[in-house]
Length: 119
Length: 431
Image (cartoon, rainbow over all chains, first blue to last red; front, side, top):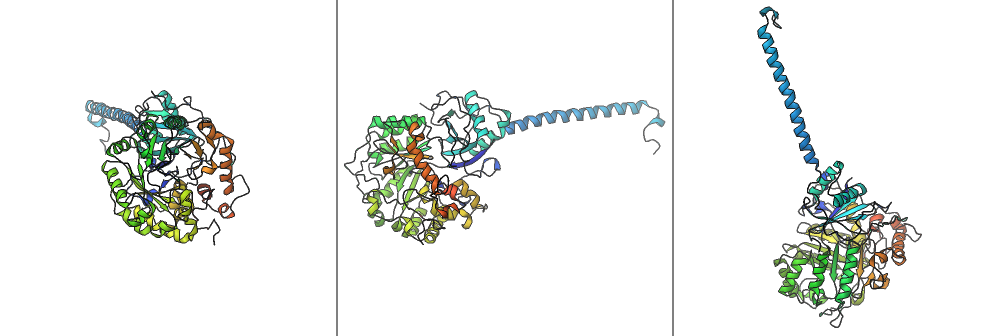
C-alpha cells in the first residue's frame, strides 16, 4: 500500500507527459518525496483490473470530505505513547509503593534483622 | 458544480491516480493504496493499515486533511497483452477550440487564419462533458487563438465546474483586462510561445516581440502561472543559448517547456526537425539549457523530445543536487509518446486525434461516439499496437536499436509518425 510515483505541473501543451526534469536538477522547486521513500519505478504495466469503485460517474457532488478523521501513523504513535506512559507510570508507582512498604517493614524489625546489617 | 479544490481519484491498471487540481500534483498509487483511498471516499473511513499511506499523502500534497475527495474515471479496465502502459482514460486533452487566429503566422502547424472558424459552443460543452466523464484532469486549450473565441469565458468556467483544470496557450493578441481576469480565475497555467528574441521572434510570430514581453508581464502581474514554450527546430536550436539567456533573465516564471518542432501544416515548409542535427550536438545543447534554466524555474519537455532527452536521463548529466541517481529518475520522468495512452487531441469539429499534430490519424468524432467508447475501440487500439511494436512489444517491426535499449519501455522509440528527435544511440539510423 504505497505511492508509486509523484509528478507535478500544469500542462499547457499537447503531451500529457511534458515532464519537468528530475527533482535533483531542480532543488528550488519544492519537490518532496513521499514518506522519505524514493518514489521510483515506472507506472506498472497493465495487469489485472483493479476493484471497480461503485461510483463510476464523475464526481459525486457530496463526496465525503477526505482526510479529516483519516487514520494517521503519527496519531497512532501518539496514542501508543500515551499507553506506554501510563504503563511506565504504573510501574513507577508500584515501585515507589513497594519501597514505602519495605521501609516500614525495616522500621518495625529488630536492629539485628535488618538486611545487610552484617556487611 | 464540483468543488474546484476537490482531489480527484480514478482507477488505473496499476492501481490509481490521485490528482490535486490546486497545483497539478499527480500521485500514482498501487492497487492497495487506491482501494484504501477509494473506500475512504465512499465510506469516510479507512483501515488502520492505511495510516502510513495517509501520512505520505499529507507529506506529498499541499493540503490533504479536510479536502473533498471525489471518485472519477472509468473502472472498466482491460488487461493488455503487449505491456504498453495505457491509462484508463486521458489525463490530458489538447483541445483546439478554434481555427481562427488574427495573426496568420508563417509557421503555424494548425494552419489557423483570420478566416478560421470557431468551434460551436454547444459542441465544445458536449465535448467537455464527455472529457469529464472519462476522468480527464487537465485540458490544454489552444487553437487558433483561443482568446478570440467569443465564448472563452463560458468554456473555461465549464471546465472548472466539471472539476477539470484548463490550461491555455495564447499569443497575447486580444488579452484584455477582462480576459486576464478569466485566465487568473480559471486557468492552472498559461503558455506563451517563444522561438527567438527580438527580431528573431518576429520572424516566427506576427504578434512581435514587444507584444510577447507585454503579454508575459501582464500575466505575471495578474498572478497567472506563466509557461514559456520553446519549439526547437534546427533554426531555433542554433539560437538556444540566446533564448536560454533571455529566459534566465526573467523572474517569476512558472516554467519553460521545450517542444520538438513538428513539420506539420505551414510549419512543414518553415523549418526542419531536430532529427536533422547530429545527436551529440542536440544532446549538448539540451544539457546546457536544462542545467542553466533549472536554477531559475521548472524545466520540462514534451514527449516528442523524449529520445533526445533519454541520453541526459541515462546518467551522464551531472545534476546539481546531492542525488546523483539520475538514471533512477529516468523511469519517473521519461515518457514516450502519450498519444492515446494518456492524452489525445481534439479539433474544433470534435475529431479525436492521437495528438493535435496527427490529424490524419483521427480515430473518431465525439458527435458520433462517446469518448469512452473511442478510447476503447479498434481504431484506437491499432494506434497503440503500432506504438508498442516499435520497441518490440507485441510486433515484429521493432527498431533493433530500440530493442536493445534499456530506456525503451519509457521512451517508446520516439514519435510514431514523424522523425522528430534522435537519441544518443542514433535510433533513427542517420549515421
